[in-house]
Image: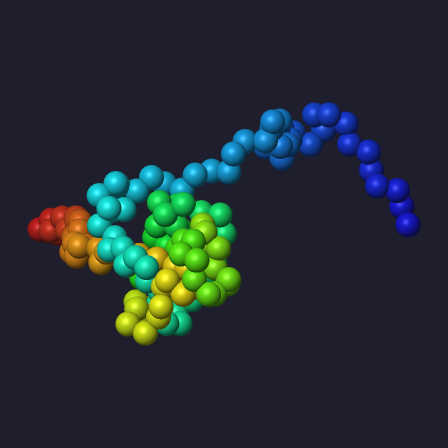
Length: 146
């Protein structure tokens, strides 16, 4: 095989966007959500949903888990959040954030599973903004009489 070519500084243009800054920057934060959005969630404490698990994130706070659910999209209708209730199940730990597509909390024992359930508020319906109608093309001038 042939040896890899040697590149000299400046030969490939600006490489700064490929370099990692030191010290490493924190990961980009999710766009901030209005506090009112986060406070509208209905907490069921203790509580959990039967099935409906989407993604499990560990070591989260409730606001972080709310943002993760909103960022996941409309499929996420709530989440289970690990709390130490001293329940018999050791599956969930405090700080666990289990996104859910089900809000069926009737047949799940949150104190046994050490979980609270947070129900995502349904966003208020806002009609889409009307798009500006395209302006009609200019009409050609009438033909001049002979």
